[in-house]
Image (cartoon, rainbow, N blue to C red; front, side):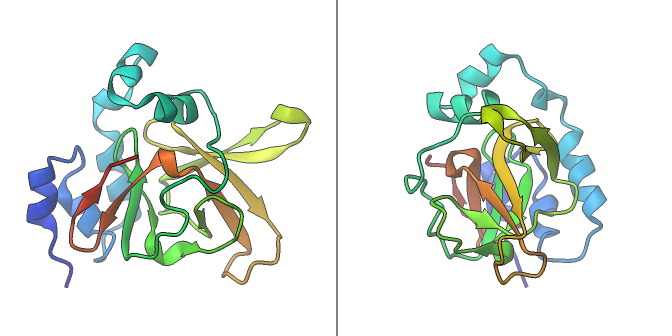
Length: 177
């Protein structure tokens, strides 16, 4: 049984440890998201975001930038745990949905229900599906469909590593971006 609640409270995450634990034990996903979104500090001005994010995190998460392929720390990560938003710590992806796509960024085939929002992105002369953190609106990356990957829904969430933190199954939080 997953027992990381004390470690997560020591970390003083903005989301109660039960939210992380619920990713490993049954709890309605709407409860997770409502807890994450109930923190009013998640709506911040650009200057507030700049004070808490690194310059690269601010460029990607708030200005919809993209990190260079192959440079992100989570592209090759194989550990069991949960990937959270680097801006607001909302749980976004379980490691069980991560796969090696060879694209140069971490790839997931599905998000935690309700944690990631989709928007049409018509920048750079093409139409793509942008994905953002539902709780804080931070830019995560893009979704691509029908590429023939052998996953349950044939989708690839191509996510910038700098948009993520990782909480391993022992509750240890990796925030070093």
